[in-house]
Length: 429
Image 1 (cartoon, rainbow, N blue to C red):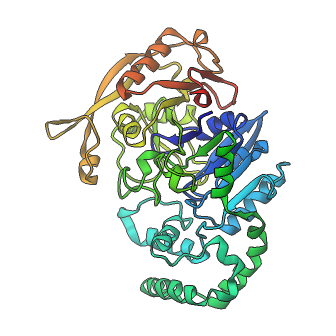
Image 2 (cartoon, rainbow, N blue to C red):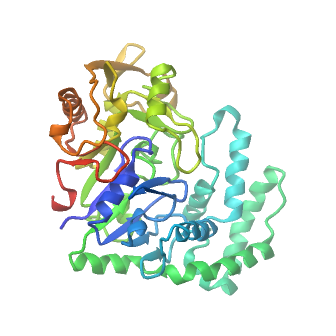
Image 3 (cartoon, helix red, strand yellow):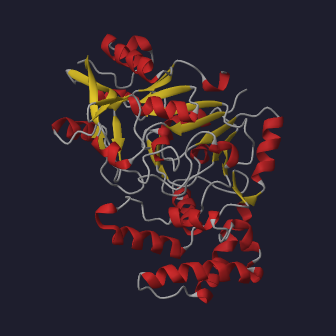
């Protein structure tokens, strides 16, 4: 059976949690392969709501879950998220959760630096979650990071701490902040080590053995392709690669790892934080989409910006990430609109674009070119087959497929996991 990789094909918040949960019941392993605890997934299982930001979504169902080496791990947040789920009767042990031994750690001064930069940026803010994700990835690339495996060798950490603190103390001095308290940092690491180390494992080996045994592996992406550090709306992006290919490097399973790539796509468009958004609606329609879709960030609670479906962006996401099929979510939010609009291209100073130009100034200035489609008055909420959908809703879906040049594999019509129309089974592809 094929592996499946689930990624967001817009700016994140597309409803990946429900889809991953729906697939996780049929998977043997669920793997997070990039990002950190800035990724929010909300699961609704038997009417009970679970909010995850670091742990793989499979953990709620007891599926073996893996945090891969491509993730940056905040050990204190990990401790708290495990405790929160334990209070909801979700048991998390080394038998159902493994953390890559080579995961870089997010440390308290990473969070400090993230916030200091945002506060000093004024109108140029990136709009980060201030959780230290970016600074932790910087230390990884700069070969300064403290990793999970280092927690078992704290007595040998001196040279690495020298390099790490020399870098960060200089940055902190520029913001008028005191140097990092080395003794306190070591004490904090010693305290948290006992929480993390029982879960530490060579996950590349676990995954390799699982693949050799023909087990189904589900890779769970965070954020969305338009936030990819290479392919997104730079610099208003996250600090990791969010495209499907990262499932290989972020897990240690190799280039054939992704399998069927399922891109999650809302039936409209949303974005949290700063950055260009060509189809954004700052009017009653945008407000209506936000209210009907309950558009608030899982991690931050920030209100999401809303707009019409942008086929140009999704087509570009599908191309750069090798998407096999899409899961179209939140179709029911469009119920009752007399007319719907889809962006099919951009105009920039009289020049037509069928892709998003790379420069942020151009991205901010493009004008969407719209196609208008008749809406529907009937409800699609809870639909579980094509027969349950209004004819105009089906026409909308088919037009989306044509414009993004990618087939629909699933349609989601509510937050409930079973309110899903299966067109093409990713695990049987």
